[in-house]
Length: 286
Image (cartoon, rainbow, N blue to C red; front, side):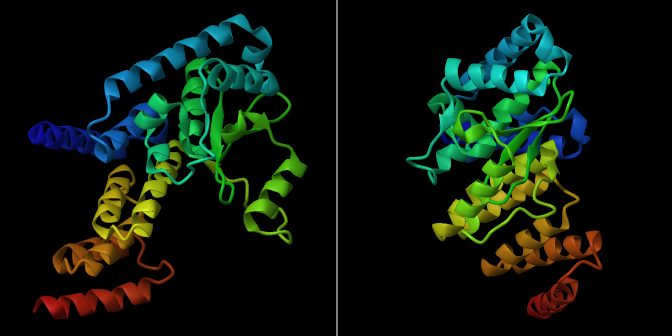
């Protein structure tokens, strides 16, 4: 059993390394998220999860064929159809009762339990939309992942955690006030579109944060290392890998990661402090 687990994790990380080399538009979002799930919980039935994703895609294609208005570009029609499919027919929803359960950020577990975090449910929406041939992307809203379905006449913003309901400006303002306090207001830069890689990193970041809260630095480090597999040119991830290795007294590994971070972004904010830390680590190795 131990050997099977090690093999499964090795295969998943090999797949993540390969995905990290792909252009954004060639990544299969759901499939890559399931590789992250295999690393997180190798005992989960990934074959069953893959079958659910396949069924979701087939149903989305059928909906697109059967609804000319949605297929022609009506974003609201697309939202209603996907909300009906994902939430009403297939029974997916946000886990408000156990929001911080790490299983809510593991796509294989989400597909089995039919519950998850906003970003995990968002991956289902993005998977279905792509199968149907409809353009969609994540929205990096503060504290709460949202989704945009594009179409004729502008996008439909969707709260995938609450049944796929449409979000208008008053809803966004109310959501922000709940997250940041009564004085919070919408401001520029809050509706940034996310690519597939960014969505996957946000999914994995949820697992990292929960491990850090549990004082599991080793587990959090593994999580960030997997994030770096997906985004090997992201200097902030390598910086985080280096800092966590330093906390664990793994000086050589910390030095390698920090040097890579600095090579990728030599003029980034905080680069001076990273250079100082690199020098300290080099002295410790001597």
